[in-house]
Length: 261
Length: 261
DNA sequence: GCCATGCGTATCATATAGCGATACTAAATG
DNA sequence: CATTTAGTATCGCTATATGATACGCATGGC
Figure 1 (cartoon, rainbow over the protein chains, first blue to last red):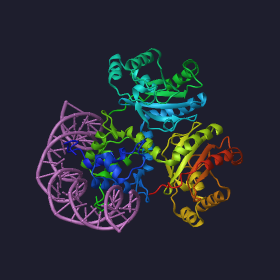
Figure 2 (figure 1 turned 60 degrees about the vertical axis):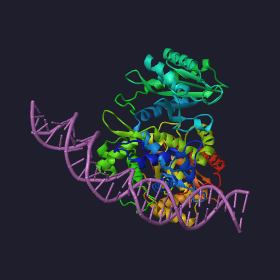
Figure 3 (figure 1 turned 90 degrees about the vertical axis):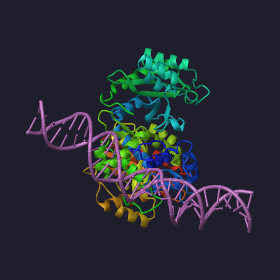
Figure 4 (figure 1 turned 90 degrees about the horizontal axis):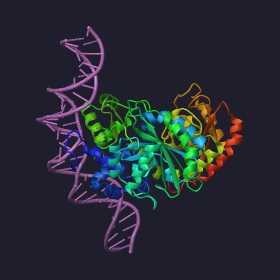
């Protein structure tokens, strides 16, 4: 571990965090050796760190299988997060209102580097599980929210982002052609909203409007996703967009607060 | 730090976690010295640990004020949690359905020691912020969900819990009298549901039905909270309870999975 | 305008606390 | 029953975290 030759860097803590990050949607419970394998740490280190996390209540341990799982503390962290994010407090009542009016799933997404992360989700219809829980991180370029946000950036930055930000395949219809993405973003520049089609899951239509800060830049967006079986672009723009934009426009991030690295 | 004279315990990691836990609803952003004060660690340790957490992306740092805040990673942890909790996947579509039918706020709460924690929330009406976000931990005895869960326990355990589990005052009408709580729990034993009244916030009525496992014990509950201005106990029982119980009954925790310490 | 205070940052000698090889135990696998 | 695999425990070594100290930069009181 020569991650940093920095005296202000505590390696053991960093390793512990590696263990926590070993858990994700496809690794929801891990044994000691799986943990060791996934983190690249040796068995002893893994043992000590996992044990510490367990004692400190960050990992639950099944007495039978001896496998580790995220504990309730992981949810408490989300709770603490919410209080620290000035946007959420502002937005929440308005999002509830919106979801009731539309009777469709409404999300709040924030930019997080070159990804977006769903900060709040108000599912109104049955959908796949990943669409109902908060905290999902997706490549910004592959989402309507990401494109809507990006569209508020100066041209130079838009270019660079479309050229370099990551893309990942989720469905057969996920757009991989960066020129098509560029067109979609530039379209969003013109109209002030972005639409995506089957990027994350087939037959899903999503529309997003940016939440624009005092400097003209967005770092969050309100998004609504519906089924392509019952909706099309025209109806989306006619029936959903107005309220969506109204909502986005009334959410003004407290000026001094920008999410910094 | 003589937290544990245990060679399987990594103190630095534990201290790092202390820093994370220093953030809560009333401490949403902290400076270095506040962190040091709140954790009881000295300035140097705090500096090193906070810096590490920052480098590892667990804490954001405002370049201007140099204060730390929870990062988006805290939400990603919730996301990972959700995949690890077998109940949530089961329950989510049914909760969405229920909230649509009732047009009232529906929550999923799990027992976590002597507290309950809100695992999923589907707000349908404007309420206070804390009621709209997941991860809130509350004394089980002060909530309808906690009482409904407790009511599925054998008499001996119920007694002990009502005698010893913590209570905290939230509103002028929070019940502090343990005998009244006992009555409420025993009532839930009889009827299979619990009602609470203004425990967390004034003029809030809540009703909860336990999700009962194969062993007859519950460790989670479906809860619905409404305004006492427009609802009363009778209507709650007549109009909400049936659907609430139906929903709770169709959620069966996969038998082998019990949340272990 | 200047000094005092408080806070964030950086440095460094020291010993403690984390390291990882190894050995032990228990439970699966064939 | 032999064999493997995974979890648990031990222990001497030294790399690593420690915390006292010093520095620089703001803020604000006088």
